[in-house]
Image (tube, rainbow over all chains, first blue to last red; front, side):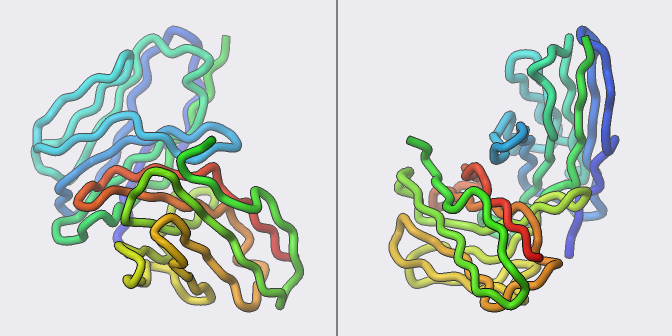
Length: 112
Length: 112
């Protein structure tokens, strides 16, 4: 089935550093979503993007819906220990109602 | 109480046993989903239901069945569990026409 290529697979950074991760696909998506999963919990929505070129922020997080509609980016500024978790991108293909396709995840570790 | 509740949270079973994972939600959403998470593979859709009388297969439905007992309840069954069904299972919900999913905390299943 359709997959989203998410990179990097994992990141080890120091507190205070900025983080960038992205998702790419060979298909066009109508919507891009970014979720965070903490240990023992389900994914929680961070940011939703609905238009090509859209740039949206949520605190220290900023995400963009790529102009080609085939990619999306998530940036985290000034990382803190509670940013630790797995970040997933998800996209909705045209004509697929509420079904989402998920990326493989980026595992983020933040060291003091 | 959580908006989306999954039971059990953890289950260890043996090959060939029948297993049911249950999901209930208090969000009043029409749409419910079952996803499976495996390391490095992200979340993959097993089954989804857009209302009580609607059941649809996702990308990896083989070996699974579901029942939508009520708007608020959606259960996933493994008729004869096998070891490669060892995974973390998530139930999720969304409102009609919406593509933002709310996830439960997950059910970790181990098949020996």
